[in-house]
Image (cartoon, rainbow, N blue to C red):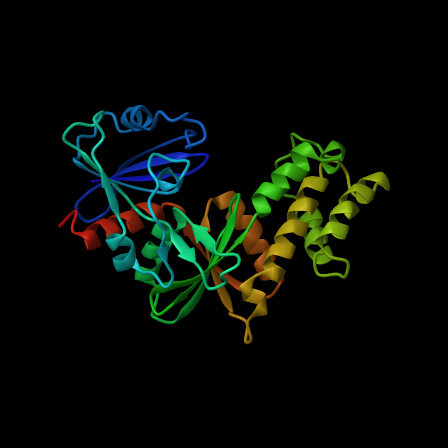
Length: 300
């Protein structure tokens, strides 16, 4: 089968054997925002040479802005819940092949501001299979970071923080960004830790953000240090406001899923705040999609 993890900014395709092991994979910066509605043509180009009839997709490709909108399933949710919500499509551009779209998950426990995720549920499904049946906290850093609680093998709650998007906006489109070295991509632990410490002080995020500007004005931090300072400040506020820090007793470990670069920053912050971490590859998406497909009966 072919597993497709198709988000806003990137497209990852995996060819899996019968047991779910990855035998080939391809990646492109062709998220749903970049392919301009040419979903079939984009997918065909990425899976060229792969003739598997079963193709299962997860992520924003199943959103209102994607190929087709797939209704959310509600928390609590597990692989069986997700499998029951899978929707099929037989596009004319792919004759003889059926596409199966995995639903996202909605947390409606707060009726005024429900929370959702699309794509992350596949990664979590794979991780759940490897965890014991207790209570677990999972963080998936990204443009919109997800904090997910898992209880007894089911996704029980979702909380989203727009940390990555706020960081990008502040750095590229605000007064703060004018003081920064826009080419700087290195992680500066000293500056990051300074931002992390600041996030625990009085004043609130909006006040602390202006402090990025004054740190530049008074030469407390260099243009190359400011991006890491801003990152530490935002990630610190995200973690301190998360369900993780509101729980009593506080969980002793967080499972992190994502790219090495982002996981390094979040792991550094969490350990600095006294929380243990266990890191997992974003390739869990392929394993999770395979598990959902098996649960649905699409594969043996």
